[in-house]
Image (cartoon, rainbow over all chains, first blue to last red):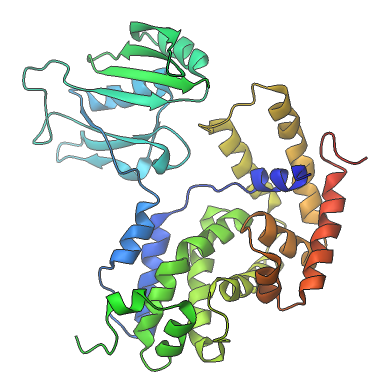
Length: 179
Length: 194
């Protein structure tokens, strides 16, 4: 019977590990040792455990508005450290995450740039996101004014999902595993 | 670049071999950091929260580097050794400040609240949720030696032998400390022994 061990684990579940801690402390250690810190493949591997390996980069004309809306409607949280302002003080780059760790899922947002704009300013891709409670997520999105492109329903492969259109026309697909 | 041992070669060696080599070639010790820094950082995040964890983790490796000549090279993995140093850091850290379980609990609550993988929708989860503050308090009230052994078992998932190495105590003592700690906590578990 392992219940009390499970509770201990829940209580101490990891907060976000900070990759900059690793970089800084390694540099200090190597300085103390008297070696020059250089790029290190093993270390890069360690850092990669903090980052998803696929990151959608989504283009918005109104990035600030998108951040606000994606938080209210879809529950994304902005990573403050990810925000970059351009010379005019507008948001040139932003990052939002879907869980408690970036590894759970991260999106990057930016204005039209070298990174993209749809060739015809139409929809060219869709982001799929798994959430814990898709019914509640659906209700929140509808209340925030999301247009529902495909109604919430159980799917034969074990997902319950819906598809929504955000204010600038991006397609979002939210699903929960139900079996 | 004049290194007597290359990076690829370093990767094929055990921790104990690398530590032995680092006596004459100190920068080899960087490989020990690369292998175990994430585990040691996690150790501290779980116990003191994310704000202080990075600095404490770095200190463990600086202390370990200074003590590398006294490393027991019959021990293949350095991780229990590093956890042992980390445990001493925790004791020093705790002496310097008020009990910090409140902070840890807040992390747990935030994570539960935001968690992608669980919701408190079902009754069982809710029961566990309500009991968490009591468990936090009970862990805080455990004798230091029992708490250390229990957390190495529950969080780092070390085998009893590795816990014994980390704490520098016999394996039988590890077993009895963990059993005592579990008995104390079990009374709090819904459906557990009364």
